[in-house]
Length: 478
Image (cartoon, rainbow, N blue to C red):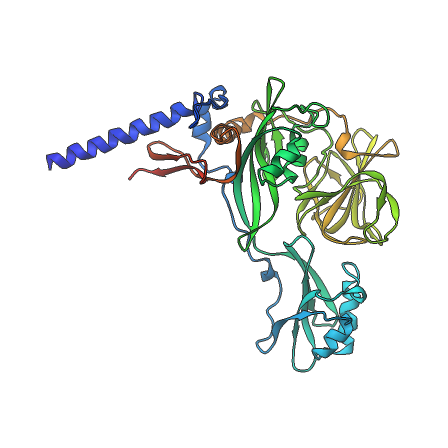
């Protein structure tokens, strides 16, 4: 019995020592296998207040799987089975559907319902649809994937006749990853060489572009570390999610940005002290996967097949991605037209600027002409309405009546983190800073796993490997 007591006391002492060592790691440089010291990020923070505030984990570091969005559709009758339809050589959509036994009336109704999204008279060999037919030739449902590999359109038969369109997404997995590197030619090329998503270069520019001119100031030997999300479907990479934390060292200065939501659902980027890194108009008013088309006076239009000006920036994103107001203002238009699809136009508080949000799938609740909106407020959702080849947001800005490039605006900064959110912010920055500092100087993408909450008394496990995931886990002691 005495031996058991001594053993229990020894375990308790070891647990306390381990916890003390981990806290010390937050307050001094972290050394890697090669002996290099990472930047001392966490020592500048009020860690006591931060850890006290970590009653629940920062949402951004908790990998999650989205729900099955097809649950929004009515169940098919038990006798109706959905099957794959593949367009054959020299075959039209009408011919392929008739071959399956679909009625003429239903085919034409589907063609009409599909017009805002796709011209079914221009299908090609190999194009795939999923069709649910009954024995009498009635089409109960037809759906097809959009170009982003994550979204699809489903047309469900309505009781009164015709078809209702549903813009949906497949269930996906969010993985938190890290990459770091040394710049030789450009950040873009460095990311490609590491096998990281090149879209991270544009996202880094969105966050730190007001601090570092990534077109002129980048030098050989600059260093970066990024904590970001990757979106996977059925185990395969689909797109790049948001950057959660980023660090860039240039000309002896180190710049950092951290993603944080001061409100309930309005994430923004701030430096370590809580100063906003965004301006009074956002460069990108949504979480996008890539820039599919830039601001230019001459672009080969993907639909019209002729050169035309493109006075906006196209941000590719899955159907249903929230689109936010780029700044404070008033909605002056929220309507549909043939080219823009569903769109919103906002006149901003300083009267000089107007922003446009094109090809939306739907408007957010309450968004209509005359309504005041705040920066970051959701005003709609990404779609492919109007003249569009796939789901994206065409974001446009006018200054004094002239189109300007949204990615080159020079404006004052937005508001800092509110005082009543600083403890929570400091806690999240502490975790992100630790994860950034723990990455080697030059490392290909690897998964970061963080299990929280982090509370005393705990037994801590810290594993750091160049090949496997970086893991910081904590579990309550019994």
